[in-house]
Image (cartoon, rainbow, N blue to C red):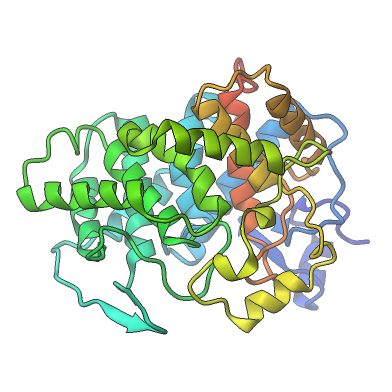
Length: 382
């Protein structure tokens, strides 16, 4: 076949094939191209320094490619790049300022009131996910790169609260994107992450209206009824941002769910975390058909995103790296990395470019970092 690996440099043969419509790429940057992810891509022959650097290169190229080609804030490429990859800059080098600039540029110069709308009996504010992910990305940049709160981040966070629903949540809307932009709890959790990550923002907040809105967010996150097991296990991450919002009982329940849902091969599956109907307030026939049509629909196989997230949640809650659940999960991830550096995962909402692969790759590196697997890894020229 013309593409034996998913990552390749431009050649005359690739140019000819592309012009003939025989090749499509997930990300393109200069002469570096990544084909659309596929389950057929070979696994790495050896996991280690080179394969980890290959993963970092994939993430860098993907974020830069998206920024230059589409220049929009999203939850599947540039969003995860800023929120979860830039904290790893000690291992992989300074992140791309161009991606950051695109987020900063997206912050409105003036904060305007927006109107809530209703669709299918569900009320929300348009652009909520965009505002939350933009704010979370800018907050992480400030914390890990500059070390101080920027005007852009401050404005973005203040604008974010114009999207808060009356009950305190940040409501999702539109077509579901699993695992990001799924439940209201998950999106509200990202908002909590943004305000607690931005250096000094919450501690120095004096605006009474905003302080009240923060309390409403905390109360909703603390008391809302979980929509599914995905919400329940995310309580473990909520405890990182707002420890007083998670009871010992909720923490124990979440840990028990993770233990019960680990597969015998050591991994976890995102699809195990919810009945299909409970992912979102409305599931389009397209998404339902896609998920029900997967070869493993009846018994979902392990996937890299949920496997990595389970490890991250356990480590964030002080489960030791030596714990057998974590060790089995790490072994699964090491075995499943592909030769391009990424971790293959089928999209659960479109089934075309499989951007969930990007999300899974970011989460895998985060899991390895929290387990000390990146210690001693020096920045590699990308």
